[in-house]
Length: 236
Ligand code: GLP
Image 1 (spheres, rainbow, N blue to C red):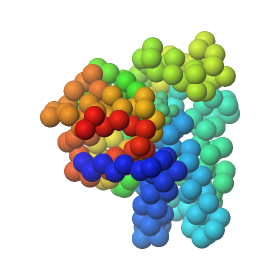
Image 2 (cartoon, rainbow, N blue to C red; image 1 turned 90 degrees about the horizontal axis):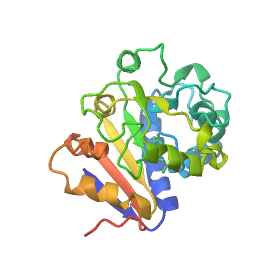
Image 3 (cartoon, rainbow, N blue to C red; image 1 turned 90 degrees about the vertical axis):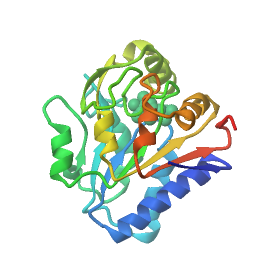
Image 4 (cartoon, rainbow, N blue to C red; image 1 turned 180 degrees about the horizontal axis):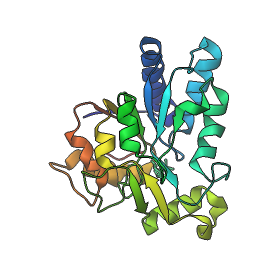
């Protein structure tokens, strides 16, 4: 695991975007794992800017999103489908048929395998250490499945999205499993802001998988890049 500290989230996001666009030029049919939440918004803006300025093509790219709320339709403004359309898909030349989200009907792990696996997986992290919606207690061998959301996650996501209305936040979601995430060839984890400090410190100090902080599973992956801004206290 390699960790890089940036002055701010703008610089960290641009760094991640450069990795992706360089890879896209080398492999136009990139298989990309995507995250939602407030963290990757600047990264998606940078990818859109690159598409506009350099005409980088997304026509052969396949994307796999990490998660989606149960019970929200793709048109719901709070759904992750809608988030991805708004921040990325509607602004690049990706084919809608090449963008996938976990749901009740699809064997997502099998689908990812059919496409040859994920080349680069983008991750954010919850302040409780969750990645995708693998909440504390998740098995490191978990596959894509329906999960119950942590009360803390529901509260945090109500504050950031859902107009602050906690009653609107679904209590369950479909989420890539930790094993699914670990099968990606390369992982880029973005963490911005002081409230991610504890989770990042727990990863850096971990010797083995700690189910109280699911992101600690990443210490076992051979190619993980953690990009943080200077607000994250690494405890060093
Ligand atoms: C959400 C998502 C995660 C995301 C995390 C952090 O609940 N399911 O995929 O990485 O929480 O969110 P944010 O980037 O808004 O801090």
